[in-house]
Length: 234
Image (cartoon, rainbow, N blue to C red):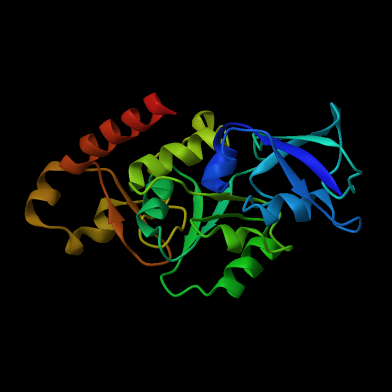
């Protein structure tokens, strides 16, 4: 049996070159679900949203019939509740930028695929990765396949995909370990500060987990400009 498929917008990035931006015929067996067929073409279930069969919206668990016309659109629904992410080993700088923007973003450089899938599933986190096969695991409910290689552009991608611009709260998390920062009295950390920092700055925050200290030094203005640039593109 055969059905006709067409994919829209960025979903074409996952398809073989000869199938991009065109309607094509696909053979299928009666027992195969729409989800199975779509993923067999290289599109993870986390990446597609509305699916129409003969013009009617259907669930991805449905089966097809001979001659059906299938239209697949990208996922575009915003996240429910507080956004939280887990990132694979190859996009660590993106984790830093997301933390800078105020988003809960778990990252380790030694995560294994099984652990990433488990954390995403059990903690309800969005899995961010460039590995489309990882996103095809059944336990993954929410995820996004990062397209760009530049970390700043990756951050813009995530802001766009999940409509996060209105939820940006800069400088609320530790860039090193992701923990929420706390205000700290300068007197309590005085012995840890450099002479010029002691002289010119009065407001400080500290990470309760790793004890990293933060203040609005010369880097602060540069980070603000970076955030503005990201927001302008998102």
